[in-house]
Length: 338
Length: 178
Image: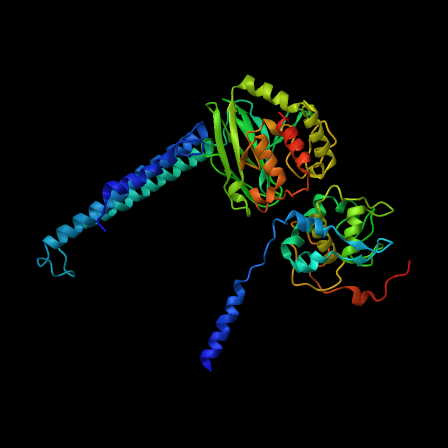
């Protein structure tokens, strides 16, 4: 087969799209991610330059050796002038190596240390990892004003966010490449990650530590919004669940609170007060369900409730037997929980 | 002769390829059939559903189902009354001599419909499959026979013997009279 350089280049082009978008460490949207991205580029440039220089030196050495072959057949009796030149090159390379590595180490130290520094009063959010979803708790000055949600973090633009990371079962890792570096979530040990979003937008995050069957479908969205907008959103989240708007939704509430749903899920303002599954009080207002698996539409909610083990095999939500009418009603109710 | 021995050993190696099956999704008719237990008139003992045998007793010897049962034991706060098997406000489970029977059918009915003296009914909180998973796990707590399958380890300190240990009943002798 003849080589097709143009074809190969064209085939590699789509890889470049990985450099931007809602989940890319090379497309920083906050100071923490920016300092990390700068580190990546500097390291790549310096190491690339060194690599080129080494290759160049090796090439020159090979070339000159070949040109002078036959002349210097006495390796045990080197010419002193050539020997000194070689010594100079080696010493120069050693000094350059020490300097470059020391500089890069220092840069890395300074950059990673700056990650924990923050200016201004941070918003403290608790993020707890479970197989395979995220529990998000917005703290406040008193515990009765805490708000628990799932699979979506909303943050105000420009204000530092202090994420307190923990895990309820196995080791997970929180990674939102556009805003910050990775941080592990370890059972029995709380970690802290601070980041600031500089521009409004949605940034995808992903569990970055293999945590079981559905590790790949353990995503969440970080949504940065203007500060006043965020405050009014948070106030809305503090409210109990919306009342059913029509008879179908009312029937759905009966199903959700009377059937097995209520044993695991909380819907504030109703009898449903289970604590082992995600809080569903405002599930209809979130962008995705099942940790980024499906968009929050009534149809997706229905499919998910009807057969969770086909949508996301191995997840901890069981298939609860429901009649067609019950399923329709409960999906209408869930979609209405804005 | 040597070739036969090598082939035999190779065949033995292939046995290592068998991985335990995890049945993550039961078809709804199977779930419905699993609910068809036939307890005796006093709701202790009785006939298990036929489908249990047809499935190959998946809740007795399958480590995944045992682990799920162990998870449900803490998720649904069995610990709240029975502690880690030692008993608290509810009776102990470690001895294997249980008031309402320790066979799978009795346990299933106990969990689904509840019992007198405080055991609540979980029939509307757990699915049929989950009840069977709990039954399988509970039978490893009050062990009646040694098993090759064990649920996952505890994250906290182990406060009692391993779930797949040999039965304690041999040392216990006859059941205490009540």
